[in-house]
Length: 279
Image (cartoon, rainbow, N blue to C red; front, side, top):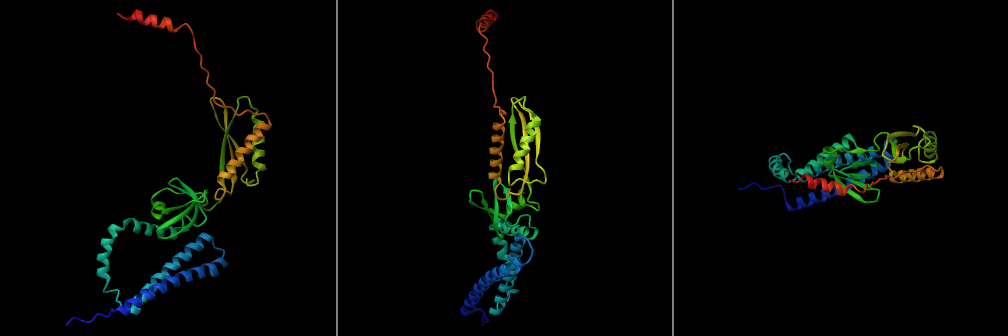
């Protein structure tokens, strides 16, 4: 006679109810923990989010284990079956598992956090959410881009907000040969000083980059903390201000010019010489 199994329809239904209760309880616990406790601390918002996520995953793991024990399912007896299934499923879910592990690494090492402005694979935007499988990045055009977590581990990531939010903007421009360079330096430093989002410390600088074909090329270097919010707008404001300052002081912004000289009377003799060379 076959032994009776301890798993019944009622126990399976109870297991489903317990699992649903654990999932709902994890969300309430994480929301309550982050909103009530972590916000009272002086921890960074990104670290608060990461800590809340990790504790939530621990709550889920413990809740699932207790649910199986309450129903009477011995997890030790399912270890061999779970291992065999895991090997088969692992080959088909390599990318998902890779992103899952990458998500754990991101939450643990915190190379990026909520609110950071990053650049990866041509996508530039602000990190809004970090989950175990993917990270949501919102661009300046308010477009949400879902980036797999594996890309943050295998690709180079530029984090403009990492540790120090101050970033130096380099604004290139050119002026005509013969321009008074000392006056130009004074005017460009005035442009930087007049902008409300430009930092006074570190001080802005004007770099002489090169002697161009038709212009003297410079870069106005200005420090600001607005790279994570208004990088394009800040650069645009500086370009407008530079153009206005140069125009008000009658400093020419040159454009490439090409001279074409046509020498008449040489085509016909050249053709005649070629005919004489023919045998």
